[in-house]
Length: 536
Image (tube, rainbow, N blue to C red; front, top):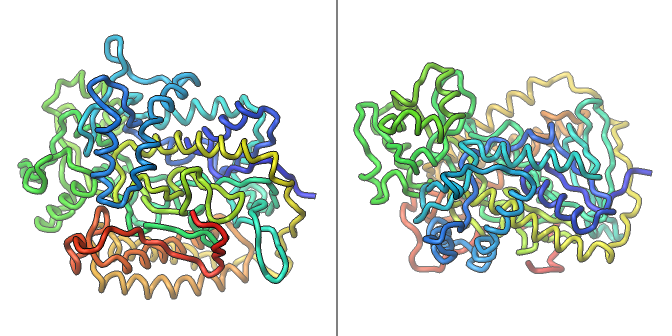
C-alpha cells in the first residue's frame, strides 16, 4: 500500500513551504508531505533579489498599492483579488519576521526601497538577497516540523479517482520519480497542492533556475484544469550579460535607488520611451531595451549606479557587487552590462481566491497559478507577496475542509513493464534546445503572427515526437521536463495567437495597440478532459 497523507505539497518555494507551516500551526497532527524536484532550497524563491511589496510606511496606502498593481496589470487584474492580497501584505511580512526572517533596517525602521511601477517606497528586503533570507528561514522551520520531506523527487503526473464510465473525480495523489534511485513512487493524499513555480525556462535566456520548466502547469492541464493568460511571459529588463554569468538577475531595486540605463555610448534612453524613465513597469523597460539593442545592433545595454557613493552601493547590493567583481566588473566605478531575460509566468492554472482549481481537492498557489492578481503584467515584488498571502488563504481553506475529505482510495502502481531504457538521449537534448531557441526567437518580447505560426507548427511536431518517446522508454528527469516544457510552449503559443491586440507583456507588431472597443478579456484554454461541474 502506497504512502497516504492528508496533504501533499508539490514544490518547496515560499508558497509551498509557508502553506505547510500554516497548516501545521493550525493542525499539528496533520500528515503533510513536501515533494521537491531538487533540494528544498533549489527553486525560484532562493534567487529572488528585490523584496516583498507591502504597505508598511505611513506615507503609503492600500489604495496606492492597489492602483499601482492595476495599472501594471493593464486592465486584466481581478480588483477583488488585488485588494485582498494587498490588504494582507503587512500580516504576511509580520509572519515572516516572527519566523526569523531578517529584513534590512535604517535607523529604527525597516528600510523600504522602490521599484518600477511603484508610486511609493514599499519593498521590504534583506539586502539584495531577500529570496535567500525567506527560503532558508522557511526551510529551517520545515526541517524542525513533522512534515515528511521528499527531496529530489520530480512529479510525473497527478492521479484522479476513477468513477466509472471513464469519468474521473477528485485528485488523490501523484506519481513521482525518485531521481536518486530511478524508482517511481505512488504518493496518495486527501488534498494535493501545486506550488511548482513558473515556466520561464521554456526560453533560451532566463533569470530562473534550471528547474523552472512549467511542471505544475503541464500536470494541471493534463489532469483537466483550465489555464489562463499564458501569453503573458514577463521578461526582466536587467539580466547580467557576461559569458561566465549564468542567468544572474540584477534587481530592479538598482534602478529604484537611482540606477540609469545607458546605450553603449553612455547616453540615457528610457525617457524617450516612458515619462517614468527607469521606473516604468517591467514590460515597458524590457521592450525599450530590446528596441535599443535591435536599432543599434548592440549585444547589451548598461545599467549604471556608479554615481552613487561606493559604500551605499556595496551596502545595498552586496550580492550584485560581489558577483560582478568576481567577473571583473566593479559596479562602484563602471556600469553593468545587461539584457532582458524571461523571468516570470503571469498566467497559469486557473484558480479561485482560495487557491482551488477545477479539479476537486487540487489547489494551485504561487507562480503556477493564475488568480487574477497580476493581469497582463506583474508589478515588481508582488510575487513573494502573492506566495505568502495565497499560501495562507489556501492553508486556511484546506484545514477547514480536511476532516470532510475521505481518505484517498487505492490507485494502480506505476507500470513500466513494457518500456525500455532509452538509447537515444541525444533526442531529448536536441529537442530541449530547439524548443527554447524557437520560443526565444518567435515568442519573445516582440511577436508577430507569422512568427507565432512558425512556433505553433514546430511545437506540434515536437509534441508528437516527445509523446512517442515518452510511451516507449523509462522516464528520466530530462524527459519529464522536456515533456512539460513542450506542452507549456504550446499553451503559450496558442494563447498568444488568440490575443489580437498588444496588452501588457504581449506585444505583437500585427496588432500594436490594445483593443479599445471590447472590454479586456482573459485568455482561457480548456483541456479536452475538462469537467464543468464547478465554475471558478
